[in-house]
Length: 276
Image (cartoon, rainbow, N blue to C red; front, side, top):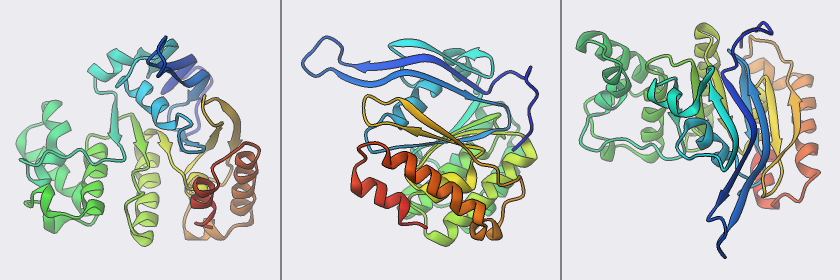
């Protein structure tokens, strides 16, 4: 979490973005409407909202995995398509997306290969990242030999391997046990703090969003719109004590009340509140 001057180029700049699937047909879905979103360099921003509100769709617009129907998306000052070609971000989504024919360590090495790293340095970096996610002993395994949670930890290691200026993360810790999840949250903050990496993070967990973020962006049910932005001032050195801080619980309550201001699916909301 880095303090940023007003003249710095935004890590993410979404202006008036909308997304319509199957336009003009009986299957038309208005997924996003008039989205304006700014993520500063070194800033950690979480997206939270009911299931189907367009959080993941918005993340995919930023990643240029899909194109907006209206508006514009820029990443590190570049149009989203160019940012994708220039590998301006790392990604960790709900599905691990590992290549079954590559070993675990070679999966983590992949973004470094694409950037032209030599074999020795990229293997060393990949092993460091596997140690970070507590999978160093599984470097030569194949993904199919790992549990779902372990596969997701490999995907997180791969996303962090090249220290990209921006991380796009879609519930990356959802498959992890609670202790590992908290460890990975702390490690993610440490890495981002050391490298100045910006993060756009999708989660259903209110406490996770508050613990990690500089700002929590609350979205409405479909068609998705940004309804509330909750600033989180918990300092840059967050640890186990942060989770017991009165300010932490105040922000959890603020986000919860923002969600309750809409017709949120009760089961989905319970998933976030239940972590407190």
